[in-house]
Amino acid sequence: MVVAPGLAEDWGTFEAFRRTLAETLIDVVPLGERMADGISPGFDVTYESPSQGRMEFGWERPFVVGGQQVALSGFPRIDGPFGTLEFDATKLEYEGFGVALDFSAWRRDVCPP
Image 1 (spheres, rainbow, N blue to C red):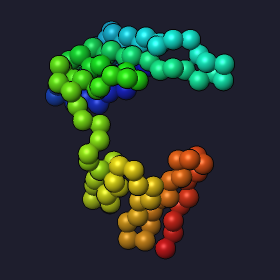
Image 2 (cartoon, rainbow, N blue to C red):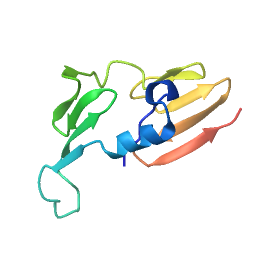
Image 3 (spheres, rainbow, N blue to C red):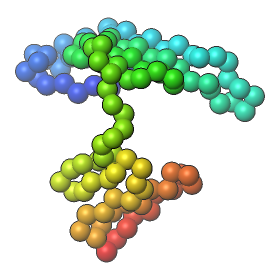
């Protein structure tokens, strides 16, 4: 499945957008057999984006779009009008409301005022 944003002015119709995405190539290559505990050793992925060009990423490879490497760190995870969340932070609040994310315990707590 491909999830991609699109604008009507770029595609003409929603059907043209859907048809183009349905025809795009996504190549996923496993990097080996699953281990005894069921964990995968990772994948290399190549996607021929109709709007961005060739996109490549892998467990041990950089994220590359149209031949240019894209940084995956060194900037906030979220940076918007309702708050900023640094990359390794676990709590986002806005005027007393927010969400605490505990990634090690797979837990999310809503933080009311």
